[in-house]
Image (cartoon, rainbow, N blue to C red; front, side, top):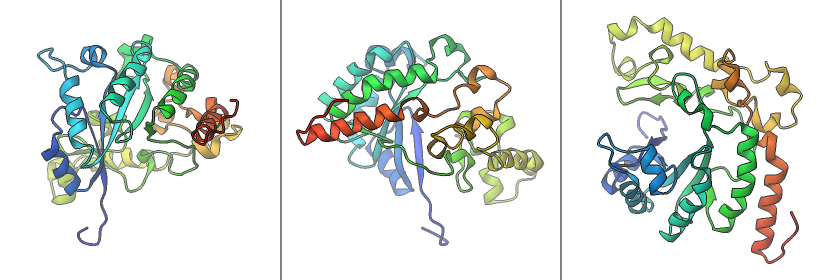
Length: 287
């Protein structure tokens, strides 16, 4: 902590170059969790996330996860769609055999065909209800094998997303700042540049009004504007769902995906988790 300012951050990466030296350096500079995307076992992951040469990345990434899991918290994020859903259990097998079940956090994320980024995957995407049905099948397996989910219990919190938080900024590789990971790389969504904080930069400051407007639209987002939310029983947990999707209301094909998974599976999830905890004590109950 310098200048009486506390700093912490997370780091999202494909994991290919994150060896022990890199992980230690990140931790020493305030990174408390590294999120690494693995989209399935090698034959699936390497088709989706290969090098420019076409060479696979799975083995190198898995080795890095093994090497750094004792240095910094690692979250393995698996982006799930209709193409790789049936291989999630195979990925769990691999992670478990490598002794990672108790060493990493796990997150299964729904693939959404956001405009301008993932539109080509539209036909492969589950809707939120379908995705939750899949989670109902997978969560008992995940718990039984000893994996820890990144979010294991529903809880009420506001802001419900870092994008609408006052103290959260996302940086790209060139130092430009954004409020939401889904807007990374989009020039019209930038809220500034790190050099504007460090020193005056006239060329960047010329865009100050645009940057300010981009920032304000996130901070001004109101979860109570949607009448559907006001009548929803999980509003205290969801708090309006994904702000980015709400801001994209003009794209109806994704607007239906704004709700959090708790709307579709909170009762089932609590029963699954409760049953698992009871089974740990050899007091199984019927779900």
